[in-house]
Image (cartoon, rainbow, N blue to C red; front, side, top):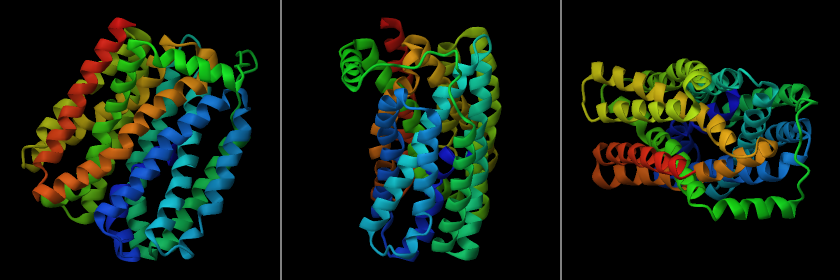
Length: 371
C-alpha cells in the first residue's frame, strides 16, 4: 500500500524534472499524469469489478510483473505519447494493487473491521509521506530515467511480496457472479438516486486532493520554502494522514463510517480555507488539517460503501467507486494547472479545491439520506 498512492500522487514532484528531461510543457505533463490517475482509479476500478471472481494472489502478481516491465522503459521513450503509455500502465498497476488490498484485507475482520481498515490504509499515508521526498531526491541525484528505474524496481518487489501473501479468507464467500451478472448489478446501481449521489460525493472527496497535488509544491515554494522543503511539506500532508487513518478506523467502530467520513471532509475544508492566508504559521495548520482530512476520506469511503452494498462483491464495490474517483482525476490536475497558468496565481486553484470539498459534503449527505 505504501507504493500505490505514494507514487500516484507524487506527480507534483515529477513536473519540473520530467519537463526538463523530455522537453514537455507543464500543461502537457499534467495531461500525462491525468491519464495515470485515470487508469489508477477508473482502469483499476473496472478490473476490480471483474476481479471479484479471481484469486487476489494472481491479480497482485500480474501487477508486480507489469511494474517491473515498465521500470526500464524511460530509456527508450522520447515523446509525450510514450510517456503517456508508460504512466497509463503504471497507474493501472498501482490502482489495481490498491483495489485488491483495500477490499480483501478488511474481509479478514468482523468486530474490528474499521480499525483493521485504518491500519492497512496507514500504508497509503506512509507512502504519501515518504514517496514525494524520495522521488524528489532520487530524480535530482541520479536523473529521471535511472531514478524511475530504481523506484519502480523496488515497487515491483513490494508488489511481489504482497502477491505471495495476500488471499481472501477461506470462510468468506467469493462472488460467483458471471460477467453478465456483474454488468447487470452495475446497471442496477446506476439506476438509483442514492448511488449517483454517493458516486459524486466519493469522487469529489478525492478531487480536492487531486487539485491540491497539482499545485501544492509550487504554492509552498512561493510562500518561501526551498524546493526540497516544499516537497517535504507536501509529504507531511500524507504523514499527518497516518494519524487520521488510524483514528478514523477506530472512530468507525464507535460512531459509524458516515459520521467519521463527514468529519474528515470538514477538516479538509478548514485546512484548504487556511491556504488563502500567506503566513507560514498558518500554512503549518493548513497542512495538519488537510492531512487529517485526507486520511479520513481515503480510509473511510471503503467501509462506508461496503456497509451499504453487498460485501460479497468486495473488489467490485471498491472498483465501481474507484471509477468515481478516476472521473475527477481525469480533469482535476489539468484544471488546477490551467487555472494557475491562466490567472498567474493560486487563488482560483485554492477556491476550486475548497468548492470541491463542500460539494462532496452535500452529495454524500444527500446520497446516504436517500439510501
